[in-house]
Image 1: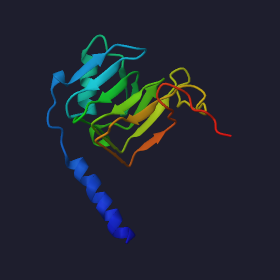
Image 2: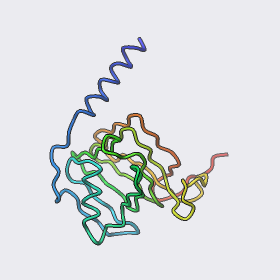
Image 3: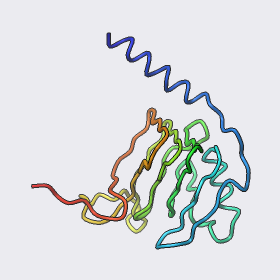
Image 4: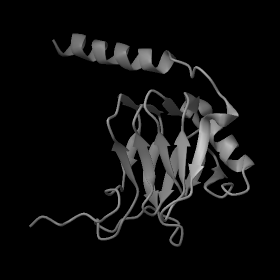
Length: 170
């Protein structure tokens, strides 16, 4: 019984991976400069390389996503995927590690596919993950009225909660 269930899950994940973005338009991103961080809002089906190319083309936002090489990126913004839209972040596109700085992360209202990547918080001053036991804000991943998220062969670690700190349970 475990084998058929595993095969069904593998088929489901494979079907999600086969879907290609329906469009890659320069106007499918906009930047909300409110609050303490800038939010990159995704309003189309797209991939990580397209998002990073667009962010680096805008003088106001070229430091929001820093390509460190070897597929590693430092992110200093919130990335929000709108209803009905999809963001695919995959090792097939050369992505290996997303390092989110401070109280930032991804909000998914539509769809997100994370394939073969590492997703963590990041402390630029120590050049390492944020390992503070939840005593201070750190990166997060949030589904808000999510339509679908596929996380395949990926690691998500050293994360916190949006906008706050974790309370230690005793």
